[in-house]
Length: 167
Image (cartoon, rainbow, N blue to C red; front, side, top):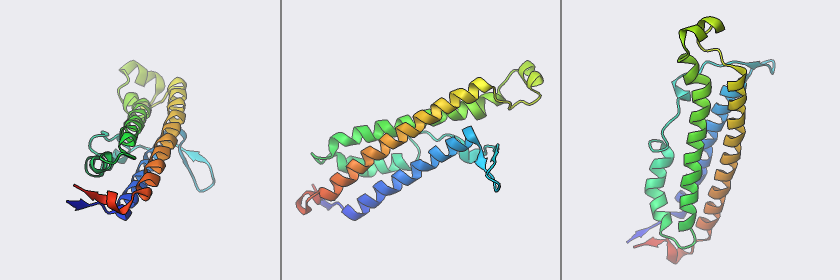
């Protein structure tokens, strides 16, 4: 018999919301650049911290495999866990599309494309436009993800003392 620590579970849900917000910010930086000191947009060089993580190897997956499994056992919560997982997986897929368009594919251009663009990383207007569309979808998906996590947090807060004992 194990007792679920409600405060720790709520904190972990809040941490997940914050950690995935980082990926939305990174996608925005890739698409729009970073605001400089003079409020001007400047292009950024994406380092390895921008590389997409597999949705199966990040902090969320560790959390889901530990806490999500526990939460799935509660009647008032179990059905939410599949929605949380779906939304999270979608976030990673959309971010990976943005990264591929703006970072990975420009490096893989043909020699002719590199010569014509004078820069192997030149991004075409159509690619930038596609990335902007993906960014808007990413933001919408993140908002939906947070909404589901907030419902989950509310349900965890509402758990009665007797429900916190996991057999």
